[in-house]
Length: 275
Image (cartoon, rainbow, N blue to C red; front, side, top):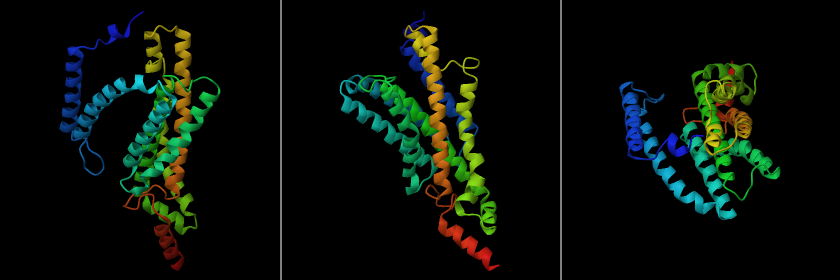
């Protein structure tokens, strides 16, 4: 059986390889001029993300052993994870004050699953297990929320004329936006679906490999990985459904009118009726 230290020794070589990989990623992003829809390049965000990851993992490694000693501290740490996820997903979707609505899809997706796991005794609330499980679920909800929200608002901006045509035909604001945004937002489920469908054939995810390296047998490791994948699918489906509803109702929107508010839609409808 391989030990974690043998698989990836923590030494100067590892630090050099990590630095080279990060520098290569930044250089390629810059050379390829990778950028978002507003023309903002991704080279700098890639560099910042790599450095932040190193700093944050070092801090968490020092903090986690102290946090798990007391239940209040443990719950506060999970709440901090949730708050950071909400901020990250919300600001990824929109730059205005509606970003805080991202709290709803992430909370509605993660909380029921965590409560179910705690009540059934599968995850102890007073141990180290709660932090990684909560982190996996919150991380999955963050990704699904951000992707679904961005894709939905991008689609509404691109196909604004179709939304207004639906309003002119008498559709409700929500229904008109849902028809356009739903297929695009649903694409946020693809990464999780592909990972689940190809597990064991293309990749061996972290939970499975980690348990094997920790000395667990194959069957318990496979069972834990299956639980993680199914729980993540459930979390992501709920997150996408909730964020889609928020976009359709105009709760999550952008300053350029993507996802529009009722005021703009109502003006369009009144104009169509006047014709």
